[in-house]
Image (tube, rainbow over all chains, first blue to last red; front, side, top):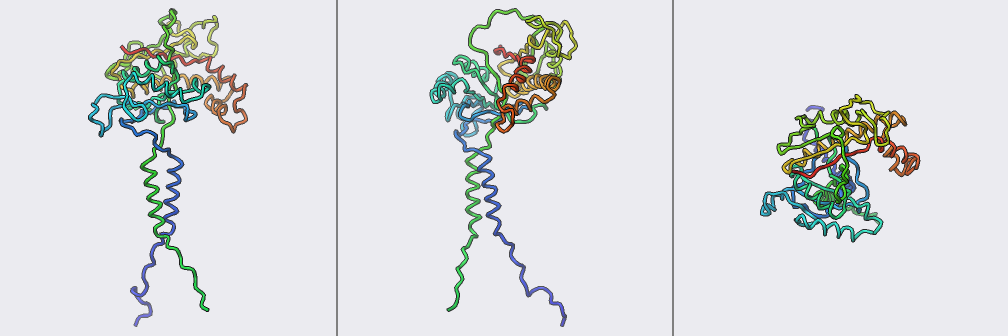
Length: 156
Length: 202
């Protein structure tokens, strides 16, 4: 009989998963802090271009977003042409004026000159649409704009 | 009497609950992009009829095939920044107040721009140009101005222009909203004003 028993007797202790919740909670808190709730669901493709000379946008409540791009896959029925999206729905060019007016009406008098129109436009959009939007903004006197871009270099 | 120990609460499902919450947040939120290139549109009034000399205008044209023509010659986008710096910083003449550009380090070529205050960059594009191309070009031009402002800030105040702007806006820095710093920043901005004009597409 050998002095050293081989295997069998003792079972491998189970790996403790007690710290698993802690890890998951840590991830959860990270995502809660680093992200914001989506306020309007995008109906268009919105792959932003990147640029190096970006500035941080200031106060969140002083920004109005104008989205533009090709309709995303589930809205194919809207056609292939790039479209504008204001708030939650597709819009025409002439609706921009009333959109800006509505945004202004919801702000205090002193804040109106500080309002910025952020253009979130898809990479593949034609400049024609972008300059049409700009012409509309000029007509209503919304001159401060911002081309929202990702950080990085656009040079290839 | 026998001591009974309190039964341990089973925490095995805690991980499941946490995962559920995690997945919920992953689905409903986005990492918002909150940075971009600021720009200002011209007011909607007919432009005043001022004569601008051709040599003070640096024309950048983007065609429908996303090619770039600078001063009517084809150019690669990576060469644009250097060309723009050369044009802005030329300082071959005088500004409106008849002063020479004493901070320019350019070639002083009489056939190029007179003064950074007079140098205008004009972008024209076709309706079919891609937005991405426009942004890359616009970004290069803005960064040409940043390079010059950065250089001037180093020379005049021996600090970086970006850092000056950051400490003006940072509530924790001692120079938060300081009048002195504001003066310095606007001095540099006035010496190299960012004049990028965007013409309506043809």
